[in-house]
Amino acid sequence: MTRIDLTELLDLATDAARRAGDLLVETRPEEGPTVTATKSSPTDVVTAMDTASERLIVETLLGSRPHDTILGEEGASEAGTSGVRWLVDPIDGTVNFLYGLPEWAVSIAAEVDGQLAVGVVNIAPRGEMFVAVRDGGAWLGEERVHCNKDVPLERALVATGFGYASSRRAHQAEVLRSVLPRVRDIRRGGSCAVDLCSVACGRADAYYESGPQEWDLAAGVLIAREAGGRVQGLRGRPPGYELTIAAAPELFGPLHDLLASAVDGAARP
Ligand code: LIP
Image (cartoon, rainbow, N blue to C red; front, side):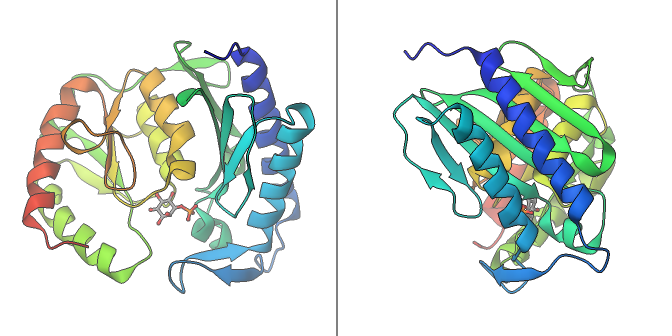
């Protein structure tokens, strides 16, 4: 077991997320950022600022901890030896960032020996910094946050998201057809990191989505868990690409079962 000071990791992640958020807010061109590449589909874009943000985060992390491992959405890949692995999304909600919508965040998580230990989500356009340390609770600034409790499925406000590939969207639309009549309403904000923080602080009762990668999810998963949420995939599997569900424990079960039967009944993506 690697001995690591989690407060040191949290401070470093917070510093890196703050610097990246400041860079993005202060230097986003008024006419919109330049799209430099596309990934899984023509609408899955990378802007020059995703790359600049990731570079700044990696420099900040490795400047203090040169022997750590880093995996970043825009290609950062450093193999370290310290037992600490960073998962970096330099802009989660890139399409919102492109359009000037204030629903995007810088997301940084650290795993120690494969276990999530620290998560930071800086929703820079709103000036909100969510943080969590394993077993230390979830926080929005100085305020401890908690998931909403005792919300029945039919009164749950449920956040979700859609992927970039057309086949995945068709599958997600079929699943949504089963979910929508059974809940209070659906929200599609455009950033899973922000959605998971919304569950953590009670702005949404639950979140589910298939498709996001570990750099999108890691920090928000820890924040939602530390706020009292249960965050898992289907049938006890870990949260991830197949499906992530987050909700207070008493809501998780009914939502999970609804999603499991909806996913089974829908055409494969
Ligand atoms: C986004 C996710 C969001 C999902 C989007 C996209 P990106 O990540 O956070 O939940 O619905 O399609 O994957 O691409 O902005 O980092």
